[in-house]
Length: 340
Image 1: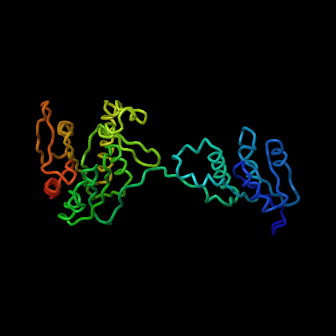
Image 2 (image 1 turned 45 degrees about the vertical axis):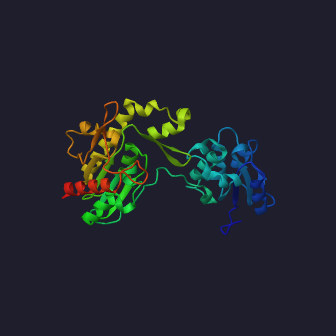
Image 3 (image 1 turned 180 degrees about the vertical axis):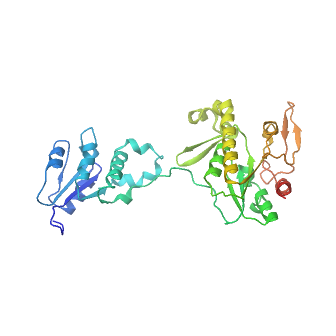
């Protein structure tokens, strides 16, 4: 009995293994199992003494509202998850557990927790609804946000040699870097739209290839670029068909992402500057011919053997592929001139 003299109904819930029964009987040797055969009787009975019962999803009828009803009749519910629900939870993808015993039970527990005390609710491992942001705000006043892919991450040069750091030093401003090697325009737009960007800030977006995409798989961001498809070979199509990023829809999605960022910056009063840093992106100049937010910076074009035009870096970094310190400095100098 409680201090109020009312009978206590304690309900243990968990998996269908022995762990649940042992936990309930350790609390009360008289604990008994509630299953599909006696659940209705338990729910409708007003006991004049304390009771301890245990049950699981597997013990219930097909319609799980009975399990929720059992929890709602309790004065306290105790959650006893199976051991592997805790040890393997982080290795599962974000949502696949929802169709399993664990997922169904935890959904019911969350519903019941609004009405009944749940002991052990903290054992439910929450999953992120969105991807982490790459960086945070560093200043209450105006600051710079540098956005892009590997050329903004500054692969193959020292961090302080990157165009973002050089520019921030020249302007004596804080800079936050939202960049990921191999990332797409839609990924970058998501980072911008969820960051703490404020009026008076400057967002500088080094645009990447429109024919890129990203997936969230096995708890990591998978950047789908032409190089990734080359490395994966024929196995790549099992993850994502290559023709989908080479087609019109991928380009449309990329420019839709840019339009969303332009609208966002205009609404909050942040300045947006976009420019091209990728050799294969020479056609961006034509796409943004009449766009006041797009700026043509230092460009050194070359022709390949087939007569195609490519943007060429002034120098290359330590890996021989990405822009070197000179190219980063040139970009920073031209951006500083635009911002002057």
